[in-house]
Length: 355
Image (cartoon, rainbow, N blue to C red; front, side, top):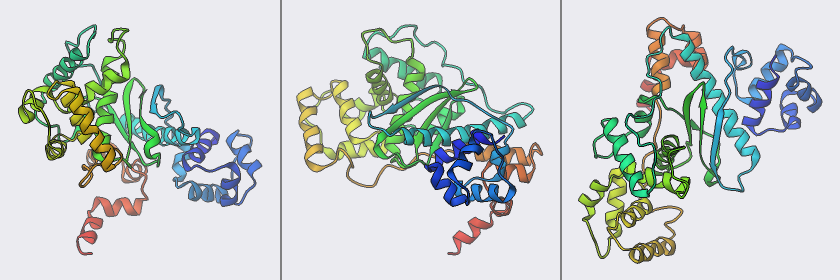
């Protein structure tokens, strides 16, 4: 029966029962019956429902069902519940397609998640959080250079990253959960890259620091410290800025952001945490951000957004290995067979190049 999937798709579309009924040509009461599996829509009505909800018919009959467990939202207190439902519905849809792809492989080619070896059993200070971030970089062979593609790093180590298109603006700060024991981190496609990266690193901090922190440490503050330390290691910051400074130039922060993908404000905060600048200097510079209106939008072009290509790559790999057919590959990617055929043959790329 399609009830639960219909309810989820309606939540993802942000539609009331009445609004969906109007689009599908049925009453709100009939939508309610569909969602409670008290009735089944005919083929014509199902097609109209698919069109109204921007889903394919296969969505309602997908054999895989997943549940998000341990959901932790980083959100502002005024985030509407409807927004959170839309995000969760979008994440569940993407997670189900992931699970269906995983199930298709006799042996899935990616490693399962495991915490880096040698993590401390207890973390009692923020300085130890810095050390833990350096340890993770060392275990994952990242060195101390900037991380150009953080999503790729996380996915390589078994952490599923989902990018939601739900327009939550500034009210949604990230989500962490697990699907079938696999950690999931969710960020928005509407954020600039530096905000995506900080959220990804922050949620990684929650994953690694959970149940390791001493009771006197605030977990959110510790994860903020981990995120900035993971993106901009202390040795790199001191190499660029020096060990101790009387003042910093805004252009220095701008250049650091461009290199490390940490916001100018994040770089300034990091410099204060490391004692490179005194706290009164940091506060004075933060006031410049306030007066210039840079707290909401920093100067210059936004840092490039992070993206994930792993799911697409594995779908095409499965197709090439004969694990899935063209129709199933199109379904997993949420495309019509016609558009998938064009994408597979790179026809759309050729058309875009000649525009």
